[in-house]
Image (tube, rainbow, N blue to C red; front, side, top):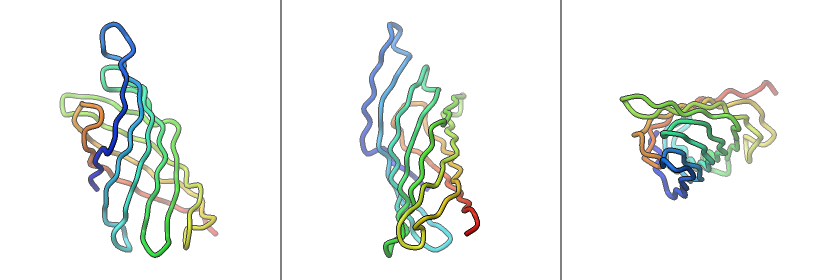
Length: 131
């Protein structure tokens, strides 16, 4: 699924201009096993040379009142000549409709250009704990 940066607020905070901290909002749509899924991700990042750590929370809207909520405190971004790669494991904290009270985790991986705030091509994979 493609996620596009709706808003990025980044601040450089060192003399050489390579350290950046900030917040962003990404949103997009994708296909899940049951149809279209709307995704909104809120993130905080702390990067040096476009790589570093991030935290994020996500809302996955499956329609018909079925929404899933998850967060991650320890995401990681690495940079290579090909661009930036992001990875995190999100903890599912519940939701609405058929996701009410659900727990589990979602793995997140994404690729983007090195520029912070660039559009992402992201993959989310979820696993629920047994009822």
